[in-house]
Image (cartoon, rainbow, N blue to C red; front, side, top):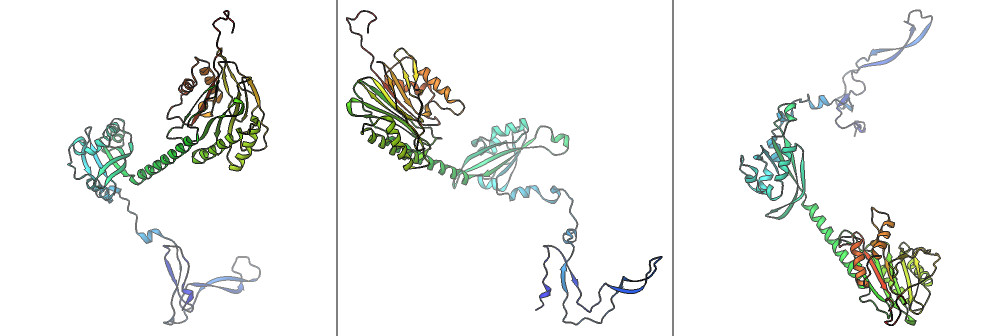
Length: 468
């Protein structure tokens, strides 16, 4: 085997044969010693000259020529370039017939059918040429494409629609339809004039549409499962302690928003006192709802221990870190004591409590908050407020007051103004707040609101005017 026959070369590079040793070849370089031929040379030296190599006789029959890469010459390999226009090289009608996508060409303001390719006729059947598109192409009317074709004729610009459904023998199929203006193409000036026709091109996107539909269905089922889980973890019926009226509402986010971890609770504890709780787990979906359920269960257990609010917050902080070190939550835990008519509370990074006094003045609990639950090592403090008869209080999550395009202080101010309006029962107050804050079924975040109200003081019938 002659291993010297192999040589690396670029693809397409022609080979040229090199004669074997001893055969006639080109000139070779030799050296000669003699007088220098340069003018004025003053001595002798060695000069390289070229002379032809003498033939060494015929090459043996067994010798094989070796190949080496030659110069790359695309013209020599492919012949002269064909400089004709594309319409001279190909029949465009035949090109369009080879396309797997439906194509139709119309002309005139009534969109008379001039041509429909093979794919179009296989999809919709044979179409009569020369009739207006409204008669010859009824499928375009069904897909809402005819108004786009009118716009193309008027504006001279492309128009397109996405995911238009076509009912065929094999079921529903979906296409993106594009309408392109056409001119007669005779001159540059006439090309800039109003178009004389429209090319309608449809690209099938059935697989993409079905995949998107399956994804939306899966998201819908997951969201319904999360909503069901969250509602099952919320109290089905609120306790109604003596001397305090309470009401709560929960509004999940719209279809485009995943369910969050908002929760509320009302817990009766010893001594006729009542614990009021509102919380919000950061994050979305089933995981946030599951964490919320664990925290709510823990709050109910800690409330039975008769601990001050700040100690309950510390215990919840440690539990939140054990549940998920990457999950945090905000919470307000308040205890209403009817004997001194006071509200003692602690907050872990939650929004302030809103209190409406009997005279309509709205106050916010602006005392220092502790860090959110799950951060670890924070200092939580308890604060006490004395409540007058007729006071209405509101605990809420950020979905009620937070908007993407507004500062949260604007939402808090709007909530305060709404709460300062005409007073009603706690149920009426909850409904009024949701309506005034713009919370609807399509809201982009879930909302929880807990409202409590102290009964107004009764004026004795035999009391002098102005004395309570």
